[in-house]
Length: 183
Image 1 (cartoon, one colour):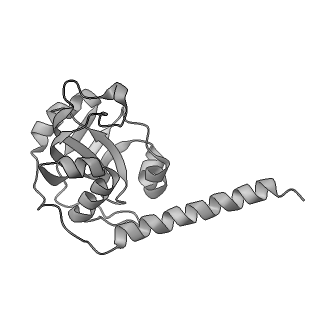
Image 2 (cartoon, one colour; image 1 turned 180 degrees about the vertical axis):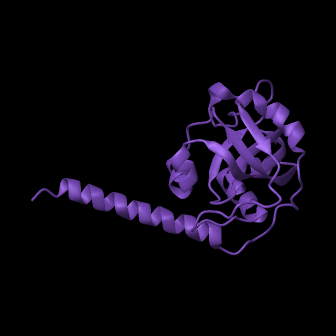
Image 3 (cartoon, rainbow, N blue to C red; image 1 turned 180 degrees about the horizontal axis):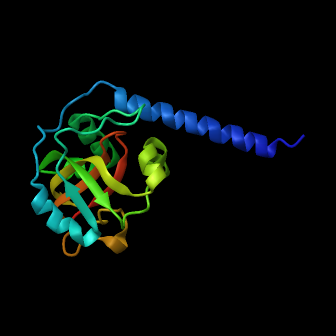
């Protein structure tokens, strides 16, 4: 009897269950220490900067359709905490942190993490952002010497200072989708 493939399969299942449990706990644990009250960023101003990435933001619908079964909108505080946990250096350096809720669309952003695809069935099915509910967590006045994406090759020119760095969080799952900065 070959144990290699069975052991590998069992290991992958256990790893998936462990990651799922950690993700669930992280998104359902008590909130500890809110960073700052959430504020709204004008979508029209943000849209101008995001067009260079092929991304459009729409204001939330006044009568949104309900999320798919098993998904529910996370809170702004949860989005801020998830983004802060994923990017602790931004949190430490930011002069302020804010959050806005929007619907994001893009035909050019087609690569997402396995975690994002596994957590959101609509994203997994379409493979793109199509009026996807998101929270954009904005870290103001940050210094990112290694670049927003962690690569020295993508470092910010000059001293590495950004007026703002943005982390896009899936509003239905709490998973990071992408980061960007254009100011």
